[in-house]
Image: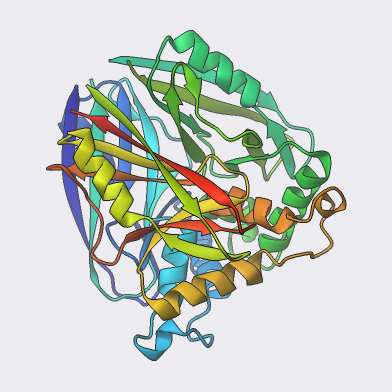
Length: 136
Length: 136
Length: 136
């Protein structure tokens, strides 16, 4: 069994921002040498999330707006009394801070329009994303 | 280590539709020969999702309505200028296009009311669902 | 390959409640003897969910309120004709009944503020949470 870890660093610039990390994820899978197995993309953060979807400019904006709509900033949250980012915690908890893909024939098995995004919900910040590839 | 892939084909008939794929997932686990491990159910699509829940007729309708309510069709999305399915992309991104279960004693370890569903958000379409069973 | 299963029992007291199970999850990882791999935290229930986030008192209340807001109790659901917990099924399906973390150097690789919570959506109940640690 092979288990390979790779860490991606991302510097975000906006409060809410979508960052495409597909290329770095695929490079990690290639480097891992794993032919078949699993690829876990995990943000070790409580105010960010990971999602998979199409990298189309308008859709990226739609995702940002949907995050803002479902998890509005400063909507009377109790956590905002000690910090100002409860919306981001809620987005991270509900959307999830990881996604997992099959690895088959040395590639992550994803749809044509299924890129991997970091969802920044409390930027700008420096973020880490852990890519783990496990298999043989 | 055993790694087994199986592909399920689903033809959907409605714009928003819930399709129970539990039987096919369980057959894949049986065929895999894996006794203990993990079972990943993954839709390689950016406009569909995978969820786990009870297969009760009324609840299926409730899930469809909740998808329509949280991700309404044609709600002024930017992506709809080039396509007409932004709602489906958002549903896929937020709900997630996969679920993962433990495999124990040659069966997926799921609750009594925890069936596996494909969530079609932009049908009718032909969909693929990849089932990967990894373990020993 | 090591595959380790541990079951956590949780007794909830409220209809909607957040229960921190981080300590039990970490004990399972320690007991497993797995150095590097994956840790799946899975609730085999259709009316509960698993999320990761910060254990801060106000934020816990914010999460409960967000569950109640997005999945309101008794909002005319069809499933409520035969049971009274459609809101909880929807919360479980959309949020997801599991989360998965990397295990690295014998510890789950989680952020400083990333605790693991059971989300009870139809309590009070006795709940099981399955922790599976797979790796080497």
